[in-house]
Image 1: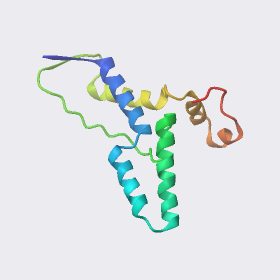
Image 2: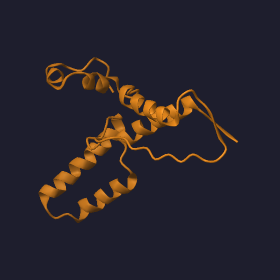
Image 3: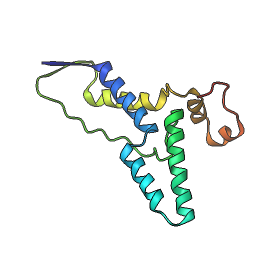
Length: 132
C-alpha cells in the first residue's frame, strides 16, 4: 500500500508548473531549429530566431515563457490501495499546488515583484535591486 503525503502532492504540482513555465519541450525546440534551416523568407527566419532566442533566455534566466498563458488542467491517475496522509482532498491539494506555483516564484523575486504591480504602475517603476 502506497502512502502519499499532502505536502508532497502540493510541492510536486507547484514544482512541475514552475518547470514547464520556463522550459520548452526539446522536440519543440528541435522542430523550430529545422524550420529555421528550411525557411526561405527572411522575415519568417527572423521570427523563428526570436522564438528560439526567447526560449533560451527563459530557460537560462528561469523566466516564464511568453507563450505561458491559459489555465491549468490537471489529469491525475490514482492507483489502487493508495493511502493519503492529508487533511485536504486531492482536488484541494492540486489547487493549492497551482496557487503556490503562481504566487511563490522561488526562482525570480524580481519577476514576482513586477507581476504584483498593476500594469501601468509597473511601467513607471523600476524592478527591485534583486536580480534573477
